[in-house]
Amino acid sequence: MARRQLRHHIKDAYAALRAEAEWKRLIAHGNGDQVAEAAFNLGFQLASRHDISGARAAYSTAIKSGHPEFAPRAARNLGLLLEEARDLDSARAAYEVAIESGHHDESPAAGVNLAIMLKGVGDVARARAACLTSCVLPRAACLRLIVPTSLTQPVGHAPVPIQFPPGWG
Image (cartoon, rainbow, N blue to C red; front, side):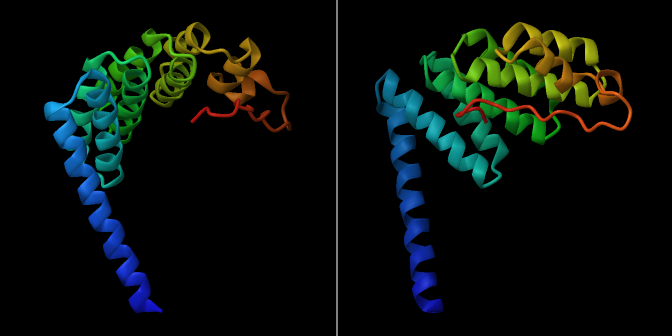
């Protein structure tokens, strides 16, 4: 049984390496749509391996492509990656690119991510502005997201959880 699992893991590793090589080839020689998708996929794979500099470069390529789907997705993913790496200024810039794209899913999701990040560093005013100007959550949900619970809930009550629509990361 262990031998079969090992064989399966080795097969998966080779498949990932082949995919990575193909994405790099498409980035170097593909057309616009191929480059954007390949760069996004490569960035996602590199991020999953904690290769921050490689993922950052790949996501930046996807963003620069201006592709209507992959550029906003790459910008939001880059924001998440940089926030996790504690590069908050760069994360904020990446989230703002996703927000400004106007993408139906990534723009509001990036607004929420930015609001949570800003609230985490104590910038409640900018967090409120990010949430209210970029997301489709009801105003009350945005306020519950970014205002301390003690200001929005009576004492002794738990905060109301926010229900995100399907597809919101």
